[in-house]
Amino acid sequence: MIRLIILIFIIFFQACSPTSGKEIKNFLIPLVQGNSSFPQNSFTSNPEERPIDLDQNPNILEENPMIIEENAVIPEERPLVFGRNPLNLEWATLLEIPSNNTIKTPNIAIDGNGFIYVASDSNANLIGDKLKIGARDVILKKYDSHQNELWMKRIGSRNTHLTITGLAADINGNAYVTGYTNGPLEKALISDQDMFVIKFNTDGTIAWKKQAAPQRAKGVYNTYKVFTEGITVDIFGNSYIVGTSNGPFGDNADGNLGGGYIIKFDTNGNQIWVKQISIVGASIYPKNVAVDEDLRQIYVAGTSKNANFRTNKTFNYSNGAGGDDLFILRFDENGNQEFFTQTNLYRDSII
Image (cartoon, rainbow, N blue to C red):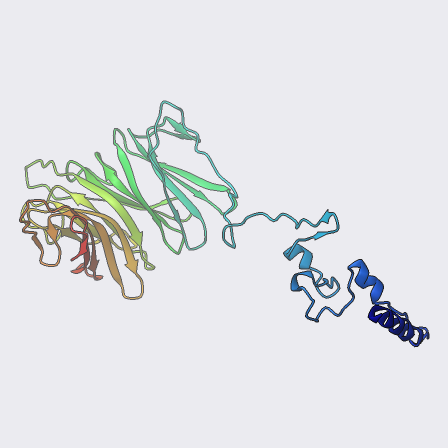
């Protein structure tokens, strides 16, 4: 009986509803069919099933791909990029040398105008159109940033073995090559093996060549050998070179003691000073050099064994094993040495 009354009430309600141009939506039929048209903000709403307005959110399908009916929307595949500016190889060049000849690992430098210099040494009979001069020659090439080779120079001396260890370029487009020689380059050998530095002008012509080594005692032939490592050039064109010598090489040399050294040449090739870096009973190997342009200070980095640079003495190890250190020394423009820092790898500590 109650159901009959409810049915009569519903029929009466629909009969009394307005029949103007507005569309009449029967809420019973959708309810029976399971397609409720109740407002989506009602308590029956499921947030995950809310309709998507593509007019207001045109990119939502790209950001949150979903299945509409049976058609899956797959976002466009985008390449994985590491960093904002990935490196791309723009160009490469090859120095062709006969297989029975050798060339050392090259050094590279860029000047203040963006030109690129590559230097090495080789015993090849022919490189480009340059014939062999000595037993082993200096090879220097200059490129612009578009891969154009501007010039190549080959420097050598008869029966002389030249070994390159460093290359630098200044803001004016001059290049500086350093290494060591077992024969005359600028002049006759000073020791058994001398260090050298060559300055090239921007057009590849040689500005000057210099040799340096421990001086021989009068009438006595010495067997001292000088090795070079790194080179740097400041904004004034002064060049600084570091290396090692097994003889007393420096204004401050003590007896016949060998060790490391730093040498300074001005922009005209004049040797300004050379300072020995040594401690009795220690082994010291300077490797690289850099200049602080603002403070006019020079920093030398290298490795050492049994050298306490803070006290300029050897370490007193109770276990007899000191290990190797990394060190940085600071020099002023006159070559005065100051302690900067030292890290002992054996103890894993900073001294």
